[in-house]
Amino acid sequence: MAVVILPMLIGVLLLGGFAAWFSERWSPIAPRWGAIIILTVEALLLVLPYAVAEHVDDLSSAWFADFYCPWIPRFGISFHLAMDGLSLLLITLTVLLGFMAVSSSWAEIENRHGFFFFNLLACLAGTVGVFLAVDLFLFFFFWELMITPMYFLISIWGHENRTDAAIKFFIFTQVSGLLMLLAIITLVLLHYNYTGIYSFDYFELLNTVLEPHVAFWLMLGFFIAFTVKLPMVPFHTWLPDAHTQAPTGGSVILAGVMLKTGAYGLLRFVIPLFPDAAHQFAPIAMTLGAVSVLYAAMMAFAQSDLKRLIAYTSVSHMGFILLGVFSWNLLALQGSVITMLAHGISASALFMIAGALQERLHTREMGNMGGLWPALPRLSALTLFFAVASLGLPGLGNFIGEFLVLQGAFSANMLLASVTTLALILAPVYVLIMIQKTFYGPPSQHSPLPDVGRREWASLGLLVLASAWLGLSPQAVLDVSVPVLKQAMQNSMVMER
Image (cartoon, rainbow, N blue to C red; front, side):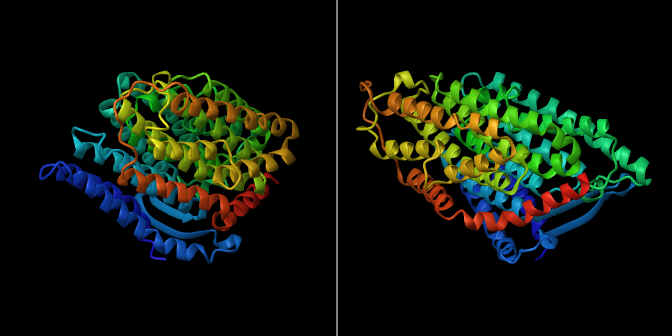
């Protein structure tokens, strides 16, 4: 495969963001169409990697694209990008939800259109960079790159308490990112003491010999950074505020893509770099995952704000991913990957619907809604579809992911897996409360409301098809991801021995 595609996947989004920003000088609608064109080019660039991924069926070829260019050779820093099935799937999700974010922002954003779409595309560029970077300095660079535009999206175009929510988001992510940076630098220095060579390269650092107590603290630095972004209880408190105050496009990217960078970091870096420490820490991590699933589910049905309720469901679903990752068997890992994709689709759709309702009703409070089904039958039906998808209806993607996670976790820790299944009872409770308060019950006094338009039909309809396809044909996704997961498990077992 032409490896130049890898830097192009980042460069097209970043340069396209600048183009969208400056295009506002000619027309206020130009940034929107520019963002659509840029994302279309990005989608076309992914055709060739999928053609190559179909032929990846052995461990030696799990990485099927690699781009290397020296950056700061004195310190072993390079512009090193690589792609495997996991990164390909998550970049595809990023592009799909990029379209959804642009669609949901089409009429909502009323000022500074160019700067908005610049930040949106820059955030996507940083996320794609996170999924491709295999130099740890470069990875940290992209990690920071995706955070700053999201801060601006929340603080400038958010709702009534946007400034406080943006600052809270920034502090949580920056402090946890600092812990990761310290762990990266320490790992590089220890590798230098062992080999006499400075290197930030992922493949070089995999072979670093570490004392058990040192490996544990380094693993913890990475773990905290990634679980803050995931997020995991008790590091989750920034997320409900950020989601509640963010514009709809920001919520789509935050829930659908940025949270997945935390899960990706656990899969890509925490366990492969520190297998012994991670395996010793696994019971604690799995317990935190189970606590996140149950605590966030209980918090969800205590909410009156629709976006805040959906935000807590995201925390609950991310707990499933944490449980699956640290179960560290093929079934649980495959379930974690499917859950990343399925949650990205269903949560983004629910945030788009919440944004559509807020645009029509000028409120997020479910107590001010009610009786909307006769007025908005199509939007109500779409909400019901994605609500039952979120709770794990068989035949849709979330069910496949959660089923595989629980099956894999059951073989790793029967007690925690059994406790986590209580979420299958709690999820219908908060979903039914959401549907009942919003679309049924006594009708509220509303003026005539427009139902789903063509743009919303196209966007939400595409997500309906994606969720149904993932639930009915998960093997296509499993075939792309399984070489990566098998290789990660094999490498981890070799290093552990």
